[in-house]
Length: 106
Image 1 (cartoon, helix red, strand yellow):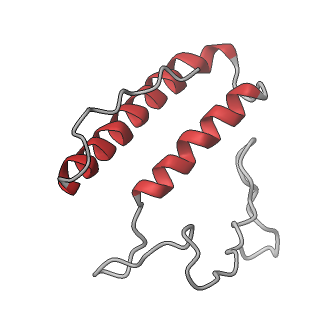
Image 2 (cartoon, one colour):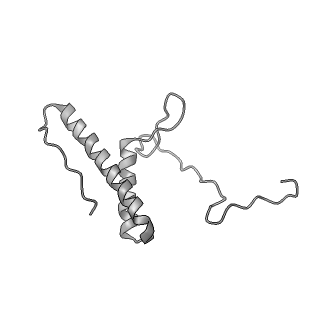
Image 3 (tube, helix red, strand yellow):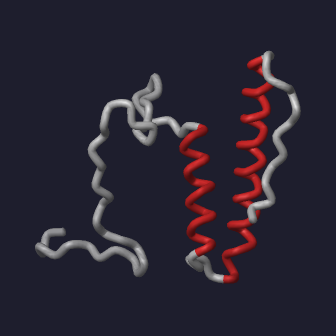
């Protein structure tokens, strides 16, 4: 802005950009660059997101009117992770091919 004032962020939005954490070699949380140079979201990242939802819910971080959408998203994430795990078990061939049931989120 020409008057020397910074633009104000909307209410509830942090105007400070997130700071990148230093990456350590071999750290599973370090995003892997794709062919285009963009970070990829891994199955391990999705597992971490599932755990974050569980912890946030247990600490009462969500408002009651948000719980339905969060629960639906959690169920979709849990089902997706279970299907990936089942595919990995089936691909191993030497392990039993019993499907891994999705958890109920409790």
